Amino acid sequence: QRKPSLEYLNRIGATGGKIPLGLKRKGLRVVVTGGAGFVGSHLVDRLMARGDTVIVVDNFFTGRKENVMHHFSNPNFELIRHDVVEPILLEVDQIYHLACPASPVHYKFNPVKTIKTNVVGTLNMLGLAKRVGARFLLTSTSEVYGDPLQHPQVETYWGNVNPIGVRSCYDEGKRTAETLTMDYHRGANVEVRIARIFNTYGPRMCIDDGRVVSNFVAQALRKEPLTVYGDGKQTRSFQFVSDLVEGLMRLMEGEHVGPFNLGNPGEFTMLELAKVVQETIDHNANIEFRPNTEDDPHKRKPDITKAKELLGWEPKVSLRQGLPLMVKDFRQRVFGDQREGSS
Ligand code: NAD
Ligand code: UDP
Ligand code: UDP
Image (cartoon, rainbow, N blue to C red):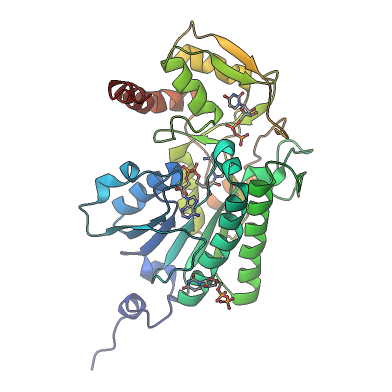
């Protein structure tokens, strides 16, 4: 009698998912938590295009069905309305764990919920990974470095984080999520990957999510002044979403746990960013200064040497190339909204 192939055994769960990656490559079952959000939906597009079976788990706090609707007729796609703070049973090979609001405005809206999502939500997804033998990838953040005293930030830097501030629900939540991830790796042999993502922009960002790129682009399109917080000399490094998705997939498929910085090292002050937005959308856009928010990090720029060396990854899209791609999407949505009288 013919022995069933490893791939078949893996599909029916008889191997607990523990077969070499090469054999699993065809038709992986992948769960993407937060897959209806900005980054998640772009990741889902790539996984679907590769022929994977994709299950999106999302509570639609900041995500939208519209971001993944184009997959609804594909039998390889499934969308589950579910809050990761509650346990869930699924049979999968890989877990991309993105569920968590990313804009400071959104994550400060209900800080206790944010920390529960990061801690209990991550615990549940790690419990799931342990039960089914799935590989787990955490989308952590450059915010684990806090208001950094080292510049640019290297993965070995432990950070400068206020544990009791208004951003702590996110910063400390993600730091705890990283700790849990490493403890499941060391204690329960779960295969894990950690990405520390730096500021990312692109199509499908929520128009009014309060992040600086989406704010400036929407403001310039609506002929409103660009709101620069503080003196505008604080810096960020902006990565286009397709570069991030490539980095996340390389990290998941590769052999290194991380953490890896995934970001574009091109560093801009907020005033410089405003200038690029003016050049791209409206040379006459005004700038309006507003008081800054509490604990705003002064500077941020990734050192991506590790990702370059071990993942063979580096960003390809500069801010000046990426911004017009986002503007096209925002233009459609901003003016579409106005026609419906809702903006
Ligand atoms: P987003 O807000 O667009 O997406 C987050 C998604 O998670 C949304 O679809 C939301 O509805 C969902 N979600 C939130 N809480 C949930 C819960 N309790 N249960 C189920 N679903 C929940 O944000 P994004 O920019 O796409 O960020 C995705 C991930 O990347 C987040 O984990 C974020 O912390 C991380 N990250 C993003 C950036 C960035 O610049 N975009 C930077 C650093 C880290
Ligand atoms: N969990 C889950 N789905 C699973 C397996 C576990 O949501 O398929 C949750 C489980 O409810 C628990 C968490 O993940 O809250 C951690 O699970 P683990 O088995 O590691 O710990 P324990 O249940 O022993 O506390
Ligand atoms: N910011 C700004 N104008 C805005 C929104 C944000 O000048 O309308 C600044 C904010 O003070 C911070 C930077 O832009 O210094 C990035 O903020 P964002 O909320 O996009 O992300 P963060 O990196 O702080 O998580």
